[in-house]
Length: 608
Ligand code: WT7
Image (spheres, protein in one colour):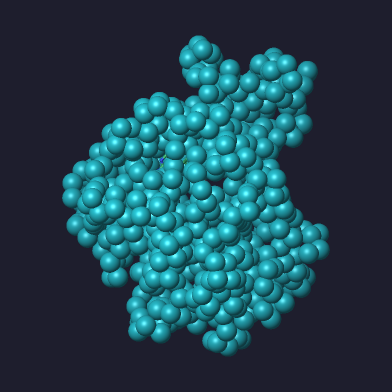
C-alpha cells in the first residue's frame, strides 16, 4: 500500500529523470548477464532500452529462483472444469523447460526463428513459451479460439518453423479439437517443418505426416540442462497479433529486456506483491495479459500462479469462487465482462465460499461500470480489498494508467499514469484539452514495455508515433479530471472491444464480403449488458440473393471460419446501400447513430 505523498514523490522523480529511474528498476528487477551501456536511445520513431545489456528471460523466470532456494516452491497450479489439479514446482518447471528447449533445438529451431503456439491454458503452454525464450526463438501465441484461416495468416506472416499444439481443449465439458485445425492451417506451407502435438489422452500421431511429433516424445529424450541463450536486451521475445483499423491484424513485437523489466516491475508494484502471494490472473496467454501477467510478470517475481483451463461458470457459476477458496488466492485479476457475468448470477454464489484470502483485486480490458466496480468491491472483495483498475494495451506491454493500492479509488475511472509514464489528453493537433474535456489519450515518450516494432510492417509501427504530435497514439478517448485521474471512454478508431477482446471492424467486414452473396459490409458496435459491446453488421447483397435466416446463419459460420467465434456479429441486417463519403469510405458512425437513435450531430467533432 502506498500513500498519495509517497506516490507523488516517486512519480515526480521518475518523470524528472526517467533514465535513472528505469536503470534502478532494471538493476533491481532482473539478473543481467551483462549490464547495459546505455539506458535509452531514441532515434525517432525507433527507440531501444538497456542497449548493450544481455539477459535471458527464462533464466530470470526460473533459474535464478531455483538458485535462490525456491526449488520446491510451487510455480504453477493447473485446474480445469473437472477439478483436476496438477502442480509443478520451480525446479521441475525449469527441468521441463530445458528438456523441451533441447527438443526444439534438435528440430533445428534457432535464435530468431518463429514458433507458433496454439494451445489450451495448460502447464505445457507455459513450458513452450519459456522454452522458446530460453533458446531465443520468437514465440507467437495464437488464442486457441482462432480459426485455421487466421492461424495460417499468422504462420505465413511470420514464416513460422514449428507449430506447437494439443489434441484438444476443454470448454463447457466438451472437447474442442485443435490438432485438425493446425493440420489444415499449415497445409502446403513449406517453411513449417514440424507440428508438435500435446496428445492428451492417447498418443495419436498421423504417421503419414512425418512432420508431426508428440510433445512428450520430444521432451523425454532430452537432457535437463540447456544453457540459456544470451540475448540482447532489444532482441524480440515474442510477436502477438492484435487488431488495428485496417483489415489485417498487426504483429506487435516485444523485446526481451524492456518488456521483462516492465512486466516484472508493474506486476510487483501495481499488485503490491509479497513473496508468498498466490496470484491468479484469469487471462489466456493468447492475449497480452496472459503474457505479462500469467507468465512473465508473476514467474519472474517467483510467485505461485494459478491457471485454469475452461470457462468461468462451468460446471457451476461458483467455479471461480471455489478455486479462490481452495487455493487461497491472494491476488485476483480479471475483466469487467467476467465480473458482469458473476454479478448477474448474483452474490449468493460468493457467499457460499470463504474469499477471505483475497487482498487485492484487479480489472482490465475495458472501462468498468461504477455499479459493477461496487459489486466487485462489496461481494468479492468483502469491502476490504483495493481494486486496481489497470488501463493498458497489447502495444504497451504492461500497465500504464492505474490506481495503485492505497490511493483514492474512483469507481469507473482507471486512475493515474504509472511511474515514468506521461499520459495526456489532447486534441487532433496535439494540444492538451481542458480538464474534464474529451480528447485523445497519448503518451509523450517511450517506456521500457513499449512495442519494439510491428512485424514486417515498420510503417504501421511508425504510425503510432506520427498520428498526433510525435507522441504515442493509444487510439482511446479519455478525460482527465482535476486530480489528474484519467477516465477511459473507449476507442476512437475502428476497433471494437467485445468482452475485452479487440476486434477490427475492417477485419470483420473483409470476412463478410468474402462470402459469396455479400457485396458490401459495414460493421458497428452496440452497447451490450454483458459483453460491453457487441457487433452489428449491415450487409448489401448481390441482386437475386435472398436475405433469409438460412443465409444469416451461413454468413455467421463463414466469419467463424475466417476469423473466430468472437468476431461473429450478433446481429445482421440487410440493407440496399450503405452511407459513404465522397471518396467511398463507409461511414460507420452514421450507421451507428441511426442504429442507436442518435442524431449525427450528437457525435463529437473529434469523431469526424
Ligand atoms: C484496449 C486495449 C491490456 C490488456 C487487455 C486488452 C481497452 C484496456 C482498460 C481499462 C478501460 C481498457 C482500451 C485499450 N482497455 N484496459 N482498464 N479501462 N479500457 O488489450 O486487446 O490491446 O486492448 O482495451 O480501449 O485501448 P488490447
